[in-house]
Length: 320
Ligand code: MEV
Image 1 (tube, helix red, strand yellow):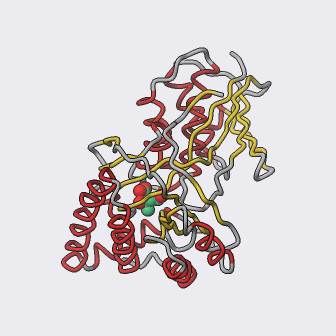
Image 2: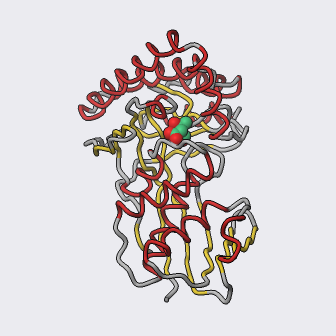
């Protein structure tokens, strides 16, 4: 066994979050923020998980596998499942060093799970199979938020811009975003994906005849957006982001803080803006032209503790 380091990108959902959980398509892009993970042999009969950002060290002993719990459980499960699939098990230390803000809707847990799985395979001298990496990260994600759609681990594994439908997998889109950027602004309120997904499903199950047409519309919106994205029609994309935000407000995942950010971005000249990810807190994403970027960032700075202006990253998980 040897020490290895891998990294995987954050994602931003451009269209279709929540609706994707119930089988509608969604579009997500990998962005230029990454989670870095080192896996190395360690003198333990289990998995040590250390997070530099959280300043946390946790031990998951093999003998206690059935009773594992901890803040970084999904990371331990990713490493463990990778070892299991190789039929090899030995003490490891997993060190996480991430640029991706946790609790932001940017898929930080999936990026960490993907990078952990990739680095674990490599630590045992195996060339990682990307399909297997994505599958194992998905298993680890299930521990964190019960019913993930699979979009986060897919983007973190393959990078680029993808259209995704649960159960059907993904197709890469030919989208480059020339001359425009994505501005992400934090509402300052952390959100819990599992809890938000549960709430939305409860709403849908209570009023199916009301919500089903909205889910259908959200699916149609994604098809239209995919076409506009590949054509480079950014004005339409922005407008469709605004419509998508309205749908997300309708299913109850927006908040006053998110609304303020969304409307501030639009007023400052963004082509479009919406909450991104699970909502209830977390971030908004605004599509902005290079000329308007400064104005939009300045306006959002009055309300947001954290702003990232990012590009799409074509690279998925990679060794370092
Ligand atoms: C979370 O990033 C996106 C959701 O659609 C949940 C999921 O797809 O697993 C809210």
